[in-house]
Amino acid sequence: MIKRVLVTGGAGFIGSHIVADLCEKGYEPIVLDNFSNSSPKIIPVLEKICSKKLELVQIDIKDKEKLFNFFKSASVDAVIHLAAYKAVGESVEKPLKYYENNISGLVNLLLAMQEHKVKNFIFSSSATVYGDAKVVPIPENSPISAANPYGRTKLMSEEILKDTAFSDKDLSIIALRYFNPIGAHKSADIGELPSGIPNNLFPYIAQVALGKLPHLNVFGNDYDTPDGTCIRDYIHILDIASGHTAALEKIASGFKGFDVYNLGTGIGYSVLDIVNAFKKASGIDLPVKPAARRAGDVPRSCANPDKANKELNWKAKYNLEEMCKDGWAWYKKHPEGFV
Ligand code: UDP
Image (cartoon, rainbow, N blue to C red; front, side, top):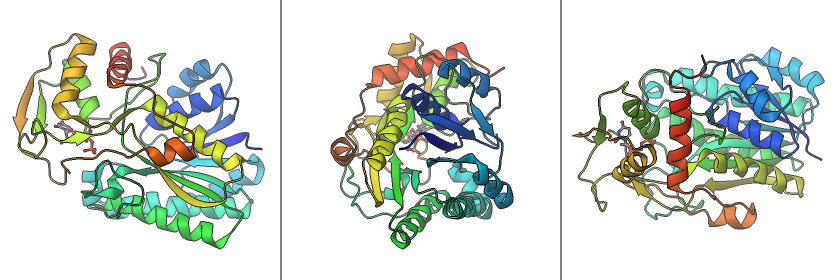
Protein backbone atom coordinates (compact mmCIF):
# COMPACT_ATOMS: atom_id res chain seq x y z
CA MET A 1 0.00 0.00 0.00
CA ILE A 2 1.28 3.46 -0.87
CA LYS A 3 0.77 5.92 1.97
CA ARG A 4 3.90 7.96 2.68
CA VAL A 5 4.91 9.91 -0.40
CA LEU A 6 8.08 11.98 -0.51
CA VAL A 7 7.63 15.04 -2.74
CA THR A 8 10.99 16.55 -3.68
CA GLY A 9 10.49 20.18 -4.59
CA GLY A 10 7.29 19.96 -2.56
CA ALA A 11 7.34 23.68 -1.71
CA GLY A 12 7.38 24.82 -5.33
CA PHE A 13 4.53 25.71 -7.67
CA ILE A 14 3.83 22.20 -8.91
CA GLY A 15 4.97 20.46 -5.73
CA SER A 16 2.72 22.43 -3.40
CA HIS A 17 -0.35 21.60 -5.49
CA ILE A 18 0.64 17.93 -5.51
CA VAL A 19 1.04 17.97 -1.73
CA ALA A 20 -2.43 19.51 -1.36
CA ASP A 21 -3.90 16.87 -3.69
CA LEU A 22 -2.14 14.03 -1.84
CA CYS A 23 -3.54 15.28 1.49
CA GLU A 24 -7.01 15.53 0.03
CA LYS A 25 -6.79 11.93 -1.19
CA GLY A 26 -5.62 10.53 2.15
CA TYR A 27 -1.90 10.11 1.43
CA GLU A 28 0.79 11.31 3.83
CA PRO A 29 3.06 13.64 1.89
CA ILE A 30 6.54 14.50 3.11
CA VAL A 31 7.82 17.79 1.70
CA LEU A 32 11.50 17.82 0.75
CA ASP A 33 12.86 21.14 -0.45
CA ASN A 34 15.98 23.30 -0.17
CA PHE A 35 13.93 26.44 -0.86
CA SER A 36 16.29 27.47 -3.68
CA ASN A 37 13.30 28.49 -5.78
CA SER A 38 10.51 28.53 -3.21
CA SER A 39 9.70 30.03 0.17
CA PRO A 40 9.44 28.28 3.55
CA LYS A 41 6.49 30.60 4.17
CA ILE A 42 4.39 28.28 2.02
CA ILE A 43 4.52 25.52 4.63
CA PRO A 44 2.01 26.99 7.14
CA VAL A 45 -0.25 27.91 4.20
CA LEU A 46 -0.10 24.35 2.90
CA GLU A 47 -0.75 23.01 6.40
CA LYS A 48 -3.88 25.11 6.56
CA ILE A 49 -5.04 23.79 3.18
CA CYS A 50 -4.25 20.22 4.24
CA SER A 51 -5.70 20.75 7.75
CA LYS A 52 -2.71 19.02 9.27
CA LYS A 53 0.93 19.41 10.23
CA LEU A 54 3.26 18.46 7.39
CA GLU A 55 6.55 16.62 7.60
CA LEU A 56 9.21 18.90 6.19
CA VAL A 57 12.75 17.89 5.26
CA GLN A 58 15.08 20.71 4.30
CA ILE A 59 17.69 18.86 2.28
CA ASP A 60 19.49 19.61 -0.95
CA ILE A 61 19.34 16.50 -3.15
CA LYS A 62 22.95 17.16 -4.12
CA ASP A 63 23.84 16.30 -0.52
CA LYS A 64 24.03 12.53 -0.81
CA GLU A 65 24.91 11.90 2.82
CA LYS A 66 21.95 13.83 4.20
CA LEU A 67 19.65 12.21 1.66
CA PHE A 68 20.80 8.71 2.67
CA ASN A 69 20.38 9.55 6.35
CA PHE A 70 16.89 10.81 5.76
CA PHE A 71 15.83 7.62 3.96
CA LYS A 72 17.23 5.49 6.81
CA SER A 73 14.37 6.37 9.11
CA ALA A 74 11.73 7.91 6.84
CA SER A 75 9.84 4.78 5.71
CA VAL A 76 8.90 6.25 2.37
CA ASP A 77 6.52 4.24 0.13
CA ALA A 78 6.91 6.34 -3.03
CA VAL A 79 8.82 9.34 -4.33
CA ILE A 80 7.48 12.10 -6.58
CA HIS A 81 10.57 13.86 -7.86
CA LEU A 82 10.22 17.48 -8.93
CA ALA A 83 13.29 19.15 -7.41
CA ALA A 84 15.15 20.46 -10.45
CA TYR A 85 16.27 23.70 -12.04
CA LYS A 86 14.11 24.79 -14.96
CA ALA A 87 15.28 28.05 -16.51
CA VAL A 88 16.19 27.36 -20.14
CA GLY A 89 18.36 30.49 -20.58
CA GLU A 90 20.31 29.89 -17.39
CA SER A 91 20.89 26.28 -18.41
CA VAL A 92 22.67 27.49 -21.55
CA GLU A 93 24.92 29.76 -19.48
CA LYS A 94 25.50 27.33 -16.62
CA PRO A 95 25.07 23.80 -17.99
CA LEU A 96 27.08 22.15 -15.22
CA LYS A 97 24.86 23.68 -12.56
CA TYR A 98 21.95 21.98 -14.34
CA TYR A 99 23.69 18.64 -14.79
CA GLU A 100 24.83 18.64 -11.17
CA ASN A 101 21.42 19.38 -9.74
CA ASN A 102 19.09 17.68 -12.20
CA ILE A 103 21.22 14.64 -13.03
CA SER A 104 23.43 14.04 -9.97
CA GLY A 105 20.47 14.91 -7.75
CA LEU A 106 18.33 12.30 -9.50
CA VAL A 107 21.06 9.66 -9.26
CA ASN A 108 21.54 10.40 -5.53
CA LEU A 109 17.85 9.97 -4.98
CA LEU A 110 17.73 6.67 -6.89
CA LEU A 111 20.74 5.37 -4.96
CA ALA A 112 19.15 6.29 -1.64
CA MET A 113 15.94 4.57 -2.73
CA GLN A 114 17.88 1.48 -3.80
CA GLU A 115 19.68 1.34 -0.44
CA HIS A 116 16.40 1.55 1.44
CA LYS A 117 14.29 -0.55 -0.94
CA VAL A 118 11.89 2.16 -2.02
CA LYS A 119 10.47 0.92 -5.32
CA ASN A 120 7.97 3.50 -6.51
CA PHE A 121 8.95 6.64 -8.37
CA ILE A 122 7.20 9.37 -10.34
CA PHE A 123 9.30 11.79 -12.33
CA SER A 124 8.53 15.30 -13.43
CA SER A 125 9.41 15.44 -17.12
CA SER A 126 8.47 17.99 -19.73
CA ALA A 127 6.98 18.38 -23.17
CA THR A 128 10.25 20.10 -24.02
CA VAL A 129 11.61 16.61 -24.82
CA TYR A 130 9.49 16.58 -27.99
CA GLY A 131 11.30 19.58 -29.52
CA ASP A 132 9.63 20.71 -32.74
CA ALA A 133 7.37 17.66 -33.12
CA LYS A 134 6.23 16.62 -36.59
CA VAL A 135 2.93 15.17 -35.36
CA VAL A 136 0.77 17.51 -33.26
CA PRO A 137 -1.13 16.67 -30.97
CA ILE A 138 1.99 14.84 -29.83
CA PRO A 139 1.80 11.19 -28.76
CA GLU A 140 4.32 9.75 -26.28
CA ASN A 141 6.04 7.65 -28.94
CA SER A 142 7.17 10.73 -30.89
CA PRO A 143 10.91 11.08 -31.36
CA ILE A 144 12.53 12.95 -28.49
CA SER A 145 15.30 15.53 -28.63
CA ALA A 146 16.48 18.56 -26.72
CA ALA A 147 17.50 22.03 -27.79
CA ASN A 148 19.21 23.17 -24.58
CA PRO A 149 20.90 21.75 -21.44
CA TYR A 150 17.69 21.99 -19.39
CA GLY A 151 15.82 19.89 -21.96
CA ARG A 152 18.75 17.48 -22.11
CA THR A 153 18.58 16.94 -18.34
CA LYS A 154 14.95 15.85 -18.74
CA LEU A 155 15.79 13.61 -21.65
CA MET A 156 18.80 12.07 -19.88
CA SER A 157 16.79 11.63 -16.69
CA GLU A 158 14.20 9.59 -18.58
CA GLU A 159 17.01 7.40 -20.00
CA ILE A 160 18.51 6.93 -16.54
CA LEU A 161 15.10 5.92 -15.21
CA LYS A 162 14.51 3.48 -18.05
CA ASP A 163 17.88 1.78 -17.40
CA THR A 164 17.24 1.70 -13.66
CA ALA A 165 13.79 0.17 -14.10
CA PHE A 166 15.27 -2.44 -16.45
CA SER A 167 17.89 -3.41 -13.86
CA ASP A 168 15.39 -4.11 -11.06
CA LYS A 169 12.14 -5.76 -11.98
CA ASP A 170 10.52 -4.65 -8.72
CA LEU A 171 10.74 -1.00 -9.66
CA SER A 172 7.71 1.01 -10.79
CA ILE A 173 8.71 4.24 -12.50
CA ILE A 174 6.45 6.68 -14.31
CA ALA A 175 7.63 9.84 -16.05
CA LEU A 176 5.00 12.51 -16.60
CA ARG A 177 5.63 14.95 -19.43
CA TYR A 178 3.98 18.21 -18.46
CA PHE A 179 2.76 20.63 -21.07
CA ASN A 180 2.15 24.21 -19.82
CA PRO A 181 0.84 24.31 -16.24
CA ILE A 182 -0.92 27.54 -15.23
CA GLY A 183 -3.68 28.52 -12.79
CA ALA A 184 -3.62 28.08 -9.04
CA HIS A 185 -5.30 26.34 -6.13
CA LYS A 186 -8.98 27.18 -5.53
CA SER A 187 -8.09 28.76 -2.18
CA ALA A 188 -5.99 31.33 -4.09
CA ASP A 189 -3.39 30.86 -1.34
CA ILE A 190 -0.81 28.85 -3.28
CA GLY A 191 0.35 29.48 -6.83
CA GLU A 192 3.36 30.24 -8.98
CA LEU A 193 5.93 32.53 -7.40
CA PRO A 194 8.22 33.83 -10.10
CA SER A 195 11.49 35.29 -8.88
CA GLY A 196 12.49 38.38 -10.87
CA ILE A 197 11.03 38.98 -14.30
CA PRO A 198 9.07 35.89 -15.34
CA ASN A 199 10.13 33.93 -18.41
CA ASN A 200 6.82 32.18 -18.86
CA LEU A 201 3.76 33.68 -20.46
CA PHE A 202 1.13 33.42 -17.73
CA PRO A 203 3.17 34.86 -14.82
CA TYR A 204 4.39 37.61 -17.15
CA ILE A 205 0.82 38.52 -18.07
CA ALA A 206 -0.11 38.57 -14.37
CA GLN A 207 2.72 41.00 -13.62
CA VAL A 208 1.49 43.27 -16.41
CA ALA A 209 -2.05 43.08 -15.00
CA LEU A 210 -0.68 43.97 -11.54
CA GLY A 211 1.01 47.01 -13.08
CA LYS A 212 4.51 45.71 -12.28
CA LEU A 213 5.49 45.43 -15.92
CA PRO A 214 4.39 47.90 -18.59
CA HIS A 215 3.25 45.53 -21.34
CA LEU A 216 3.49 42.00 -22.66
CA ASN A 217 5.96 41.39 -25.45
CA VAL A 218 4.41 38.91 -27.84
CA PHE A 219 7.35 36.92 -29.13
CA GLY A 220 6.67 36.49 -32.84
CA ASN A 221 3.47 37.08 -34.84
CA ASP A 222 4.46 35.47 -38.11
CA TYR A 223 4.42 31.79 -37.20
CA ASP A 224 2.46 29.41 -39.36
CA THR A 225 -0.51 29.38 -36.96
CA PRO A 226 -3.99 30.94 -37.35
CA ASP A 227 -3.10 34.23 -35.63
CA GLY A 228 0.67 34.02 -36.17
CA THR A 229 1.55 33.46 -32.48
CA CYS A 230 2.77 30.20 -30.94
CA ILE A 231 0.40 27.54 -29.75
CA ARG A 232 0.75 25.70 -26.43
CA ASP A 233 -1.28 23.23 -24.40
CA TYR A 234 -2.04 25.13 -21.19
CA ILE A 235 -3.25 22.92 -18.37
CA HIS A 236 -4.63 23.77 -14.93
CA ILE A 237 -2.15 23.07 -12.15
CA LEU A 238 -4.86 21.12 -10.31
CA ASP A 239 -5.07 18.75 -13.29
CA ILE A 240 -1.29 18.37 -13.27
CA ALA A 241 -1.47 17.54 -9.55
CA SER A 242 -4.20 14.93 -10.02
CA GLY A 243 -2.12 13.33 -12.80
CA HIS A 244 0.40 12.38 -10.11
CA THR A 245 -2.12 10.73 -7.83
CA ALA A 246 -3.47 8.90 -10.89
CA ALA A 247 0.08 7.64 -11.59
CA LEU A 248 0.44 6.54 -7.96
CA GLU A 249 -2.80 4.60 -8.30
CA LYS A 250 -1.48 2.91 -11.43
CA ILE A 251 1.61 1.85 -9.48
CA ALA A 252 -0.50 0.70 -6.53
CA SER A 253 -2.55 -1.46 -8.89
CA GLY A 254 0.55 -3.48 -9.81
CA PHE A 255 2.33 -1.66 -12.63
CA LYS A 256 6.06 -2.51 -12.86
CA GLY A 257 8.75 -1.16 -15.15
CA PHE A 258 9.05 2.24 -16.79
CA ASP A 259 6.42 4.19 -18.65
CA VAL A 260 5.77 7.74 -19.74
CA TYR A 261 2.59 9.81 -20.04
CA ASN A 262 1.68 13.23 -21.38
CA LEU A 263 -0.16 15.53 -19.02
CA GLY A 264 -2.00 17.97 -21.24
CA THR A 265 -5.55 18.85 -22.26
CA GLY A 266 -5.09 18.15 -25.97
CA ILE A 267 -6.30 21.67 -26.77
CA GLY A 268 -3.90 24.27 -28.11
CA TYR A 269 -4.19 28.00 -27.49
CA SER A 270 -2.16 30.80 -29.03
CA VAL A 271 -0.45 33.58 -27.10
CA LEU A 272 -3.24 35.95 -28.18
CA ASP A 273 -5.90 33.44 -27.04
CA ILE A 274 -4.32 33.51 -23.59
CA VAL A 275 -4.18 37.31 -23.57
CA ASN A 276 -7.87 37.49 -24.48
CA ALA A 277 -8.93 34.83 -21.97
CA PHE A 278 -6.96 36.59 -19.25
CA LYS A 279 -8.53 39.95 -20.11
CA LYS A 280 -11.97 38.39 -19.86
CA ALA A 281 -11.26 36.63 -16.55
CA SER A 282 -9.66 39.65 -14.90
CA GLY A 283 -11.53 42.52 -16.50
CA ILE A 284 -8.15 44.18 -17.02
CA ASP A 285 -7.01 45.53 -20.35
CA LEU A 286 -3.54 44.20 -21.06
CA PRO A 287 -1.16 46.30 -23.12
CA VAL A 288 0.66 44.05 -25.62
CA LYS A 289 3.42 44.82 -28.08
CA PRO A 290 4.72 42.70 -30.92
CA ALA A 291 8.31 41.59 -30.38
CA ALA A 292 10.88 39.45 -32.16
CA ARG A 293 10.59 35.67 -32.01
CA ARG A 294 12.19 34.09 -28.93
CA ALA A 295 15.08 31.78 -29.82
CA GLY A 296 14.19 28.11 -29.52
CA ASP A 297 10.39 28.53 -29.51
CA VAL A 298 8.49 25.88 -31.44
CA PRO A 299 5.36 27.06 -33.28
CA ARG A 300 3.05 24.36 -31.90
CA SER A 301 3.13 22.17 -28.85
CA CYS A 302 0.03 20.29 -27.87
CA ALA A 303 -0.41 16.93 -26.15
CA ASN A 304 -2.17 13.87 -27.34
CA PRO A 305 -3.43 12.88 -23.86
CA ASP A 306 -5.13 9.61 -24.93
CA LYS A 307 -2.62 7.33 -23.22
CA ALA A 308 -2.99 9.04 -19.82
CA ASN A 309 -6.76 9.25 -20.31
CA LYS A 310 -6.96 5.49 -20.87
CA GLU A 311 -4.17 3.99 -18.79
CA LEU A 312 -4.12 6.39 -15.84
CA ASN A 313 -7.85 6.89 -15.89
CA TRP A 314 -7.10 10.61 -15.75
CA LYS A 315 -8.40 13.51 -17.77
CA ALA A 316 -7.81 17.25 -17.48
CA LYS A 317 -11.09 18.75 -16.31
CA TYR A 318 -10.53 22.50 -16.11
CA ASN A 319 -10.95 24.82 -19.10
CA LEU A 320 -8.99 27.92 -20.06
CA GLU A 321 -11.49 30.25 -18.38
CA GLU A 322 -10.94 28.51 -15.03
CA MET A 323 -7.16 28.45 -15.49
CA CYS A 324 -7.17 32.22 -15.98
CA LYS A 325 -9.70 32.91 -13.23
CA ASP A 326 -7.88 30.79 -10.62
CA GLY A 327 -4.42 31.98 -11.64
CA TRP A 328 -5.45 35.62 -11.49
CA ALA A 329 -7.20 35.14 -8.12
CA TRP A 330 -3.88 33.98 -6.65
CA TYR A 331 -1.83 36.86 -8.08
CA LYS A 332 -4.44 39.40 -7.04
CA LYS A 333 -4.61 38.08 -3.49
CA HIS A 334 -0.83 37.73 -3.11
CA PRO A 335 0.79 40.30 -5.40
CA GLU A 336 4.06 40.08 -3.46
CA GLY A 337 3.94 36.32 -2.96
CA PHE A 338 4.17 34.96 0.59
CA VAL A 339 4.80 37.98 2.83
N1 UDP B 1 5.65 34.32 -24.65
C1 UDP B 1 5.50 35.64 -25.06
N2 UDP B 1 5.88 36.63 -24.20
C2 UDP B 1 6.41 36.37 -22.96
C3 UDP B 1 6.56 35.02 -22.57
C4 UDP B 1 6.17 34.02 -23.45
O1 UDP B 1 5.02 35.92 -26.16
O2 UDP B 1 6.77 37.31 -22.25
C5 UDP B 1 5.23 33.25 -25.57
C6 UDP B 1 6.36 32.31 -25.94
O3 UDP B 1 7.09 32.81 -27.02
C7 UDP B 1 5.60 31.04 -26.26
C8 UDP B 1 4.39 31.08 -25.33
O4 UDP B 1 4.27 32.45 -24.91
O5 UDP B 1 5.13 31.10 -27.58
C9 UDP B 1 4.54 30.21 -24.09
O6 UDP B 1 5.75 30.53 -23.48
P1 UDP B 1 6.18 29.88 -22.09
O7 UDP B 1 7.59 30.33 -21.80
O8 UDP B 1 5.15 30.17 -21.06
O9 UDP B 1 6.14 28.31 -22.37
P2 UDP B 1 7.04 27.38 -23.35
O10 UDP B 1 7.37 28.18 -24.57
O11 UDP B 1 8.23 27.00 -22.55
O12 UDP B 1 6.16 26.23 -23.67
